[in-house]
Image (cartoon, rainbow, N blue to C red; front, side):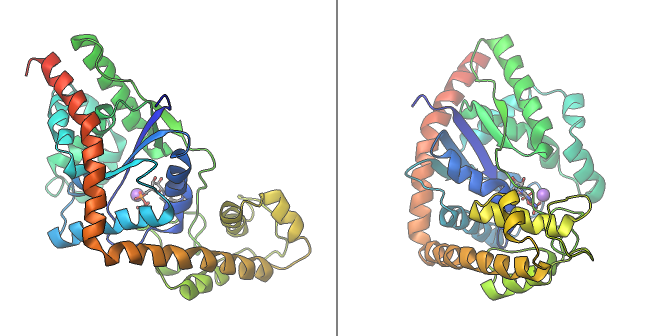
Length: 330
Ligand code: ADP
Ligand code: NA
């Protein structure tokens, strides 16, 4: 196809995706299938940079895939696979490790943050070279664009630098990818503390909407979301972060613009917005949960689907790897 190619990955999840994952990433993956030649993967190799229980990791990989499928990622419209099923990722990563400066890798702020939290003895070399595996992930597919959030921008810069270095030294081999800042990617905040983003690691149970939770439980969390002491339903992220967050979620799920919502709720109290949104979220999660359960109920079918995706991915990856090894003299 002459569509631009995109490559994106998501970590296996030991539990449910949350509303931020969906509205900030997965929903855009679904849309990009229509305009791009999309490659999407569950990045289990990245997951083992911190210790994982084997059975839990395998289950988490399937669970992430099932949720992607339930959200509308369609193997007929894109290539969906599990990173470790395509051995070329680690094979190319070694070459890229040998082209990346130690100082260059040491400047990655995500590594600095994560390793500072873990301490030097608990931090693995894998965590250190994680961005280099990401370089290989992207270059293997000759991706034109990489949909990323702001926190991944530095890794895309590294990918571009290493791709240009490889091409300069060995002849043009890899497409130099551009970051693709997602359109309509909503940033969702914690329902109890709208100063922080909704996050698996940082949010309290009441602050996060997990897509696989009982719809009733999610509705209850929306109804008890923290708001300010005013009464006006108006988008004002500084002065009214809680209400603004609820407006953004409503708008993202219904397609109604925020100004339209402000008009609709003019003169009404916060409870009216919360009640309506609670219903909208419950209506959205109900079929999502059912579809996820359907995919999980037939692991053989799910595995077959992922094996097919891996075979499709490998067609592209094997060609890139063979060319790269040849150019390097391997
Ligand atoms: P978490 O922060 O909960 O651990 P991840 O870091 O695994 O989530 O993020 C997976 C994807 O979901 C990324 O593309 C990330 O940008 C997106 N994402 C995570 N939280 C939010 C949020 N609160 N709002 C918007 N997008 C988010
Ligand atoms: Na995170």
